Length: 152
Image 1 (cartoon, rainbow, N blue to C red):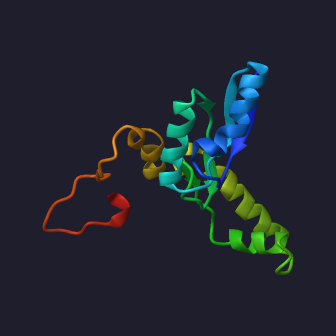
Image 2: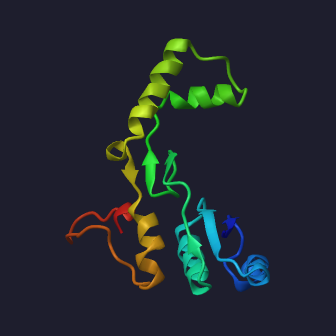
């Protein structure tokens, strides 16, 4: 048995873990952070450091999301996807069956890892930055030349 909890959008402090650590002590059971993510790279680094300092195992959620930069892999949605989402949120008329089918099958194809955008900063925050806080570029740069923020 293990006690599993989720952690989202709360402080990365000992106080934030007080409840789950009390349960671990009370029931003499291991603790597992079974789901977390959906925040900033700095928050990821601090959260993982905190739970590991407290000998808590962890898992990240999600690996992939549509058009999101806060997960390791971003599923790129076709531009028409907004029409489907607007309909689901009751903001527009129902799209045609043909459009919905085309868009949803395109998203299904984009789920393949090789079609996703790799958010290298998320992985860097989760693993390297917990032990090394130096700023590193994501690729080599030549000066003079252009430096794009997403590559640093």
